[in-house]
Length: 69
Image (tube, rainbow, N blue to C red):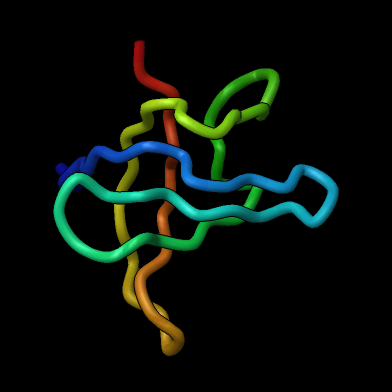
């Protein structure tokens, strides 16, 4: 099973299709709109989320993002 991480949405621009999550531990992580696992795919600054991580050439990327709470 993949390890789930937790954080808070720092920024999300629906028009550009990406944002950043502030992790509880570690650096902020980049994410793309299509990684949000929800029907509405809308995240707001301050939303608590869980996600998996993948190492990319430019740094960590959040995948399989789920809104918590």
